[in-house]
Every structure is written in C-alpha cells, then in structure tokens.
Length: 354
Image (cartoon, rainbow, N blue to C red; front, top):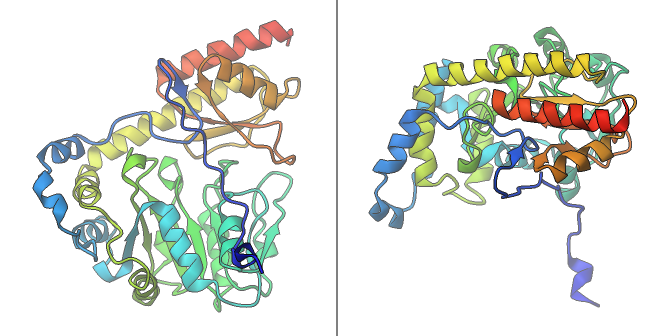
C-alpha cells in the first residue's frame, strides 16, 4: 500500500495574488491603503531584539485586555489568534463536530468549505436570494452550526442586525459564528447580541480597518464558556501562537481610536465616490458596506477587464466561479489610486466602444 493512500487530500484555499511590482496599484486583497496608527510605528521602533529569544505570552494577556476594555467585555470573553483565519479554523475544530451539516452561504468567503473538507465536517452551501442577501428562513432548519460573514464577501452586502438576530435566535442548539472582517466600514456589529445569546461567536480582524494584515491578528468575542472552549483547543495544538511584535503593536493599534475612526471614514468616503462613478459608467454592483466593491458591466467581460487592468499594473480580484465570473472585486485604495483605476477603466471602455 502506498503511503499516499493515508494522505488527507483537500482542495486548498487560493489566496489573492501578492505582486511586488514598481508603481503597482494593489486592489485585490482588501488591505488598508493607509499605514497603521503612529503608536504602532513607534512601538515597532522600540522593540528589543534581545526579547525575541523568549516565548511570547501564551495567553496574549495584554492584547486580550485592551480589546476587552475597548469593547466593554471581560478578558474571559475575548480570544485572539494569528489573523481571523486562525481564529475561524480553531472555531471550526471546536464547535462544528456534529454529524449534521453546517450551513453557510453559497457565495461567501471561500475558506469555509476548505476548512469543512479539511476537518471532515459535513456542510451545505445555502443559495443567496436574487438580490444577493441571506434569507434567514433558509437557516431555520436542522444543522450542525452556522457561519456567515457580515458584510458578506465577496458581495460586500450587509445584513441588518435584526436579520442576524433572527438566525441566532432560531438556532439555540448550535454555535452561530458571525465573521465581521468588514464590519467597521459601515455596519453594526452583532457584538450587541452576545449577552443575550450564549451560542453567538463574533469574529473580527486587524487586517482591514486597522491596517495590520501583515501582523496577522484576529479575535473572537462571545460568552466565557465559548472562549474557554476555544482556548482549550488552542492550547492543545500550539500555546505560543501570537508573536511578541504582534502583541505589542496590536495593543497600540487599539489604543489609537481616533486614527482608527479617521482611517475608516476616509475609506468609506472614497468607496461612496467610486460607487457613484462606476454607476455612471454603467457598472452594476451590490450596495457594498465593506472596503471593496463587487462590480460587473453588462457589456464587458469580467475576465477581460481584469486582464486589461493587470497589464497596467492595477490588480483587482477575479474569481473563476461561474456564478460570479463576470464580476471583479475592487478593493478601495487611496483617492489617488482610485482615480488612476477609474481612468484606466474609462480608457478600456473607450477602446471597446462601450
């Protein structure tokens, strides 16, 4: 028998391209176009290399505490991990162990089915409504757990807090995870519900609104029992997940609330302007409440536009999924970057006679 017969085989998640070209405009992985807060930059300069010989705090206490204080929680209600992907992967292992299928939207973050396959979790991808929204009624049936992003990705659509609560309330016997990677760009967090529903876990990240994708910081918030179960699984696999620089700089990021709000406000303003300009050009898109726009044009091939922009060193995200193949996901960059993007789109449309 070949050793390969014992290999666990899965189709892996494919991350967005990380090009490194001079004068490129990178709008494909929803990173923040602005630098982290000044306190983060100062903390980086003050890091002592000699300390790197020591393990970091396994409980990530300093970061847990500042997050708990910021969100009005106790330390026991916060869990941190190496990016929200790490937090979500641990949550899948911890809470989705039923023989019943977990539920998540058909068009959504494409890591969900990868984790489900990796951990041998049965799942059903629930079809979205014609307007791309989630229908809470579709989640009122027997299941082994529920996860969905709010706002959704790649559509950018936000579900109301009432719709989120309807799903959580209808599923008291399973854990419902709300993945809020983009909530800071105009949505209302489900955090307001965690005191009412012990089965609700809210997951957020520093990668988007806090401009720290490279530091890999994610966190979850929920009742103390949920967080304890997450920590039990974490400490059964890798105790020292959060490195020292991430802990130090993560704390400083949370402390500078004024900069955080200023940055997200700039991104929101740019997003709304670009929405207006794309709409005037005939593009169609869901009403994004995230830091990206998911757009298509009825007279232009999504794949061809993606390639045309790429040739000009402008990178957007195109998905091969036939259900969304005509769309491109466009991260909101600085105003200057978006002006160049729009100019290139207009030039391409002129060349195509559109």
